[in-house]
Image (cartoon, rainbow, N blue to C red; front, side, top):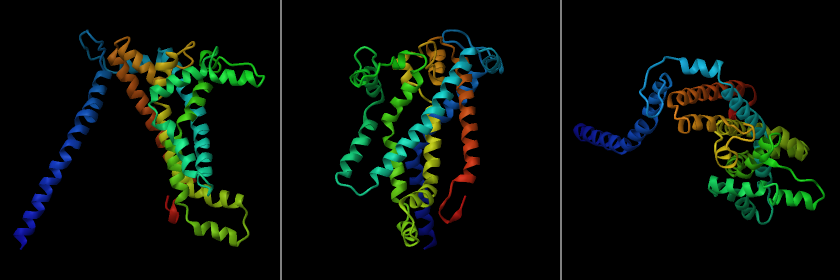
Length: 300
């Protein structure tokens, strides 16, 4: 009997390893090896077509002390992140809150708000290029029909980032879905307890909804922060980093360094600095979450 059991366990182990092998090989080939290779390249002066020489941490020193374009791209990305994350989080939460109400045609509204998310990113970007066009774009036509003067949107240094933030609100569908799932998981008996005490809708929202939603807000905050530091398509398709580098996002600068200037070693160092920045910010958010994120049962 023991022999049979042992044979079944061995067979299950063998099949488990066999079935997990493709995923493990994929992780090794497409994640672990590139990460290690990227770090090695970052300590070299490798340019495509040239010989590679190990130069230690010179690339990092140059980036941090001499590269003004690095400083500019980091400023642009931070500005965009600080502007975009709170705006998109707030709008997504409000939409999810409205979609959680019991009204007619709710499924249609949910579909409408989620539709932009399934549109390919490049297609969305091309659509917004037309919307932002200062001569014949829809946004300026609407403003002028209401008696306001038009804007140059992404073609003006002062309005470029706010315009891209406006564009980013177009694709908050995934965040809305996550918020909606969180709202529907709030226990109904908590609202009933507030009603028994004579609490108003605002008290239910402030004392029940917001605290119950803090784990979901925390998750969306981290994901959005990482996403904004990886902004790329807007600069690549719409602005090429202009005007006057006002939309030179960090990842676009990294891409340009690697594939236009062919400085793979320098670009790898930029990638590792970005990784350290995102990791540090995420660590800080995780540390502060102990003070404002409330889990069921009081666990932190």
